[in-house]
Amino acid sequence: MIATANRDGAIRIYQLNPPSRQRAQGNGIDAVVRLAFSDSAVLSFDSEGRVGRFDPVSLKEKEEDKVQIPSDFQSGIKTVGFHNQIKSFVIGYDLSFQKKPFAGQLAVWEPHPNSSPTSCPIKEAVRSVNCHPTKLIAAFVTLGGTLGLRTLPELQPVPNPI
Image (cartoon, rainbow, N blue to C red):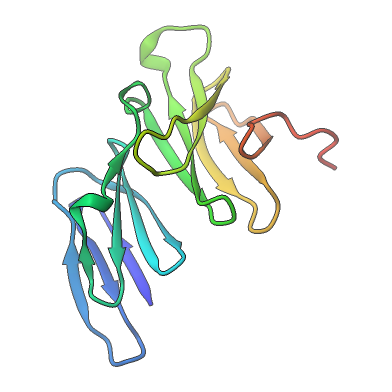
């Protein structure tokens, strides 16, 4: 199975076995930032922090499965990773527009209604984030080129990373 998304807000799911089929999903409003597989669903995370959950068998999205990150965490989303082990998104922010001492932020959020993200400030805006496939660690790079490692879901600096 292959899932794709781009700036039109639609998610396209291709199934290779049985024979391929394609169907577009989504509301076409906001750019999809990240796709992830969780159990038997395809998750989409858009630029406003909305998460859709798609069933790859029926290729349908249920309205009751849509959730959105709390409003305090909707602005400045720059990059998103997904850690399948904890079923959570790791979100990197560029908050330089807020003119605060910390231009970036990391947040970990499990996409469920009334779920509150765990977050920590980062001195520079976050450009990219990725999650380790088996360890509870997220790596991030800032706009200034700083590489950082944080534990999940607590977002504590990784002691002795080497």
